[in-house]
Each structure stands twice: as structure tokens, then as C-alpha cells.
Image (cartoon, rainbow, N blue to C red; front, top):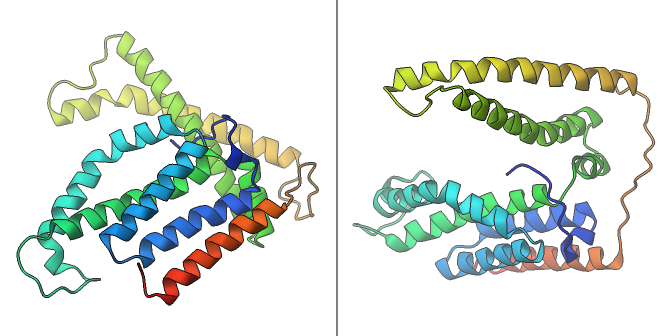
Length: 247
């Protein structure tokens, strides 16, 4: 899921900083809203972002993977809401509305940042963080993380399929046996990860990334009028919700 997709869409033509503001705005609205109807509206806006970005396949994978987690959150908040450290309620019994509210809020908090990651290249992410005056080392580290987490996951799948084709049974037997059967996958993956890290380190040294000098870039971020309009709209919406005390 942590991978950039190359599908063309209207929102991809926005400056990556504008897309970041949209993602952060959705997260803030999810925390500010206090009603089930409000979180449903925010979730609908988040799903609209996925549709406009052409991320339907990614949305389906997220829902399949996070479905059990969302169901567990719904059940726990419906039954154990009286023991929350953050909310205090006088009602007793079961609150399915609160369970649905918290599950939908969790879904928005998952979908909003993943939409930004899926529509932003690692280079754009680094430029965005540097433009926000964050340390260059931190920006580079975060960009490399999103770049190579997906690569390592692909390496894992390739090694896993290769070992299964050789007769390694990964999903049978006791828990201890299944953990032991994953050793032929973990060891090559660690070796492969070390090789990737060594190549990245060598490439960064060749580009004088540790010299402390200011780097120039061919690709520069440019703010357009549409970016100003979208960022202003998101900021105005967040301020309006804060002024109203939550939807």
C-alpha cells in the first residue's frame, strides 16, 4: 500500500504541498467532528478524493486488510466506551452509534495519509518536507523509507513464492512450526535488505549527501492559483468547524 501509483488524475496535477494540506485537513476534521453524521460526511469526502485520484484498487485492498480491525474497533467502542480515557459518557449499556463513529474515524485516519502517499513520489515528498523547513536529513530519511518499504515488501513476496515452490509449508502445523518455517524467508530478506541499504549508502556518498552543502534540484515545486484556492478552502472549512465546536 505504501507505493506511488502512476495513474493520471486531476488531483495529481496539484502541488504536493496542496495534497498534503488536503490530507491533513481531513485528519483534523476527523478529530474535530463530534457526530456520526459529521464523520460520515468526512468519510464521503475522503472517498471522493480516492475516486478523483483513481485509487479504487488501493481502496479495495485497504478495506480488505483493515476490515477486521475496523470491526474490532466497532465492537470494543460499542461495549467498552465507559472505560475510555478520552471521553466521558453518562449512558450505560451498549452504544452502537459511538462504535460506528470511532470505527469510521479510524477509517478516515487510515485513508487520508495513504491517499497522499499513493499520489506523491518520494522526490516530491522530500521536496515538500524541505520546503516546510524540516531538516534535510529527516526529509531524506522519510523519503527513503517510503521508497524502499514497498521494494522490500516485493522482495519478501518473491522470496516467499520461491520457497513455497520448493515445498516449504508456511501455513500448516503448530504456531512454533510456522514461525520456524519462515526462517528460510527471513534470512534471505535480511541479506537482501542489507544489500539495498549498502547500495543506497554508496549512492548517497557519491552524491555528497553528507557534505552539508546546499543541493540544487532540477525539479522545483510551483504553487498555482488552484493550489491557493484548495488550501484556502480546506483551511476555511477547518476553522469553521473549530468555531462551531465540531459538527
